[in-house]
Length: 224
Image 1 (cartoon, one colour):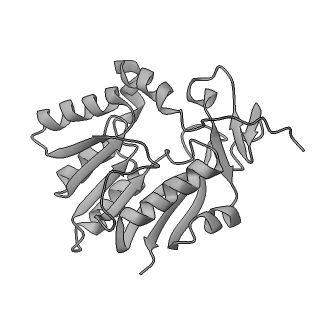
Image 2 (cartoon, helix red, strand yellow):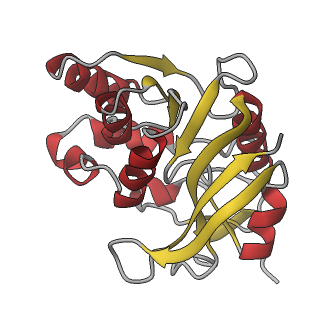
């Protein structure tokens, strides 16, 4: 059993991303929308769903895709540099995107605001309490039957169990960019429990670009 070291604040990864978004090199790998997200956007265009939120938008690769598809688009992040880059891209493309500087645990929207919420590689940055609060906020701002699409870190990920465990299943690798901030990992059963306010329609554990980079990819509906 590992020794858990308590910490006061764990939702701090935006500090690393703030530095990354300030350089062209740092933004380079985060400009193209994920294929799975693009596929779901295409399907949603054929429905009456019109209002979308990109939660943890970074420099806005997905928010820009929502806006191009005709959605009323909102984007939220705690990185001022990311939001500024997104607004610049939106202005250049003649797109209307509302940007919001706020944490994922305190979404500045009324309940039942959105038809679709995306949070790609975002809400696992924190301890279990932070993750649970972010999920609760997503459920709150979605309309009944609204769609959530997102990712979570899998316990198959090569970084699980490496570094310091600062809370249950929450690990920090000191000195390694955003891994210097807490990351929460879960198995399938734990993920299903976390999302008990949703009906899961798709769940897959798969690698991203690098070997060992296992993430859960999921699509779910807010319960009616």
